[in-house]
Length: 250
Image (tube, rainbow, N blue to C red; front, side, top):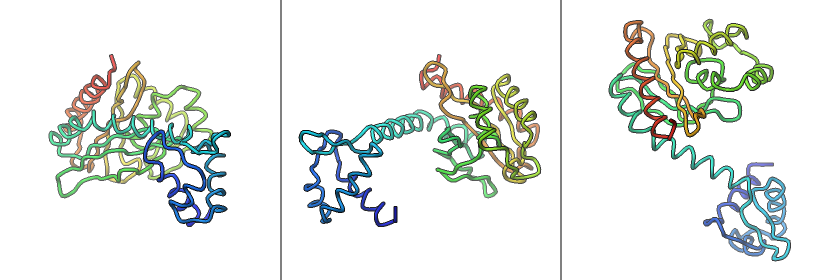
């Protein structure tokens, strides 16, 4: 599908301002000033992928289950960020380092929120940035709390690509680190994705003890030495626990 066609399909979806909105193809063609044949073509595609559903009796289209699923995911993510934000602010202010949240999406780690360090030299990450699950503390914390079946299949599908000399590229070594992570409740990485950086992460759990996100902190290696790490590990584990309690984890 070309860029113009995709844009028209998205414009069509944007006509739906309320959950219960329904439109006929003629209504949408009029709103968008498009030929009815073009609108029908986009409606067919959106219906096939269940972003829209056509009522066979009224011939009207309403939002489908794919849109509803994405809406629930967006709502869950928004609630997570709102609950976590005060704790992220406190941890960043206390540590003077960059703090961020990651979640698992389509087999990758995705940064959904960051509080950047106020120091001139700092490690940063863009919101929306994606990373392989095996490399770096912020990603590996998400992999550590998945089932053995998920982990095995993920490794088979994605492999263990190397980003720096410190990236864990051995399955046996990775499984050992994941086991240790679950035992101690946090993980630390040293230049596994970016040379000269240290990152640490702890799990955030929601209702029923289900992993919902990872809380991470990262900075330059020369600043996050062993002495500093001891205090930061205590802080990040405590903060992740406080966020988990806020989300209803008992």
